[in-house]
Image 1: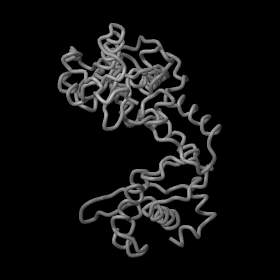
Image 2 (image 1 turned 45 degrees about the vertical axis):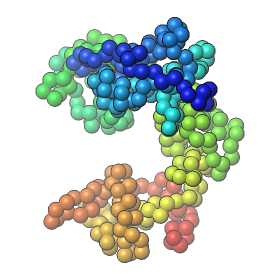
Image 3 (image 1 turned 180 degrees about the vertical axis):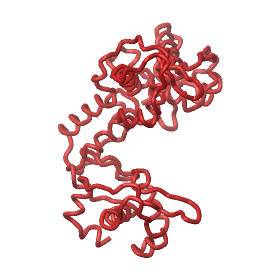
Image 4 (image 1 turned 30 degrees about the horizontal axis):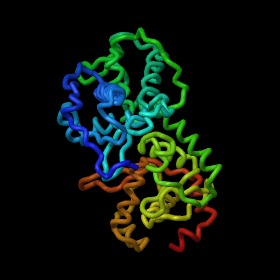
Length: 349
């Protein structure tokens, strides 16, 4: 909580962020977050700023530094995970009190750093030499099991380290003489997910609702984004079930996930239809036909199909010979095992 109803607003002029220029391939988030961390630490030490002082808006900082608001958002997340900042909705981003009193904060390998080391190992293990072209980001993402967005950020870091360079829109190995760190160490998100798991087992039963992400972020001294990502990991493990709106994040018993949105029930029916009646390349009935079959709105059917498309099971093709086509056959997982045992749940909806 802020200690004053009128916290001091730090101005961009006070901060004087002289980071307008960037070298080719230099990681902007790294450079600006490093500058911001140093500025906060030194300013606190000199007494120029104090805990709960508000930073300028993302837009103001973005304009002054010559980068996008998204870049500044990423910078804030990095500095939040170092325990120096905290963000509150409708308030802003302010200097965190714990940073001034020397409390221990979570500091572990970020997902970007982890990916950087994995790519370095990939280069070594596959005998890349100086001048060789790196495989595509999509193939690298599939091989390492990491999102393309994270791969791109890691590649930017490797370019700033002169390991890679860009030539004609292709990434080329610039230097193979580098050391590989231990890539088996946990990321901050993984570490926090373990802490949350222990916290759940000690304090919650199945069906009980967890505190908000902002409350958990304050408890574990990390950013809300880190909590969000940790909860996503625990959701994949079947420990938590996150709902929008009033439901929030609920502790579940691995399989029992009874609360469902209408479009999710339709999604389950379409999944079942694909598994029983289709093969890769098959064309699904039109949205109107599915809507009439299950007596729901076309909007509900579209939402269900969009989810299946995001998971890679179907694709939409426009034009005269277009339609909705099956690209993969869904497999039964734990969620659908429960529904297989309780078929009347779907059939009665």
